[in-house]
Picture 1 (tube, rainbow, N blue to C red):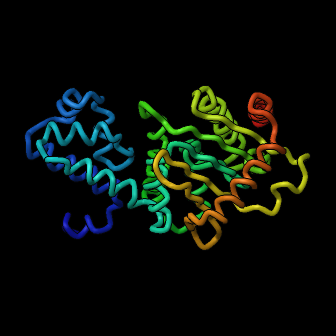
Picture 2 (cartoon, one colour):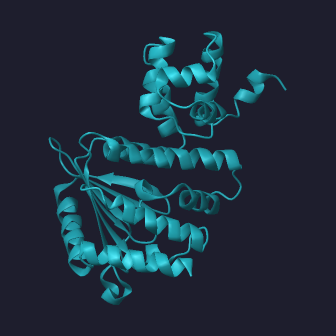
Picture 3 (tube, helix red, strand yellow):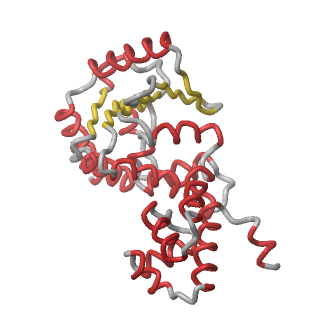
Amino acid sequence: MAEEERSEYLTPLQRFGVEVREIRRGRKITQKGLGLASGYSEAYVSKVEKGVMMPSEAFAQKCDTVFQTSGLFTRLRELVQNGDNPSWFIPYLQLERKASRILDFSATCIMGIFQTEDYARAIFRAGHPRHSLEAVQAKVMARIARREILERQNPPMLWVVLHEACLRTVVGGRSVMAAQLMHLMKSAESPCVDFQVIPFSAGAVAAHMLPFTLLTFDNAPTVLYVEDPQGGKLYQSSETMGSFSENYDRLRSHALAPDDSLEFIEKLSKDYLQ
């Protein structure tokens, strides 16, 4: 089969890698040379070209500088970020990158920004059992890329209320869960991240609620994102905002304090290792 025919089956992540490889070869630059010029390792460049690693925004910008491609790879990377997410989720992602505060309630699954690769992979493999391993990996990398908002000079403030069910549901096996909970504790070391756990002992306070996220902005109204089995929706009406903001305050009041929540998570992570 010709290369042109095979290319139409590439994921957006793989397409990005192919473009880097072809332009690099056209410029007669080795992977090591591109790595040195961009500040990344030869192994990093190789993984990006193979379509198994989500390129960082900085790497895409360096490619544009080295190749003199006038922002091509920066734009391609944005397509990669959006391309491996469902269409209904893209408007939320665009707002998430602009938010100054992100308030999340996770009822059954840990928020995507804080998922490890193995946890995310298990989620996607369960949700898309007929997809190829490559397609699943592309989705994983797109999800992991969301962490970049935490690495900005002025990251948003994230406050995540986790129902205990998120921590007790064994996704990917006990070792995957242990690593996932340890990643939560590591993430909480950031001054812009707080976790609170609602234990089962809190009763029905969160039992009837779907997960939701409130995004607040410096110069724009608050936006609500709610996900259900059919997809996700954004809401902006003041009445809806008021209702969900009150619900979020109520959830926080029934949750463990942040320090107690981290102790809870740490204990559970150790239980998974036994």
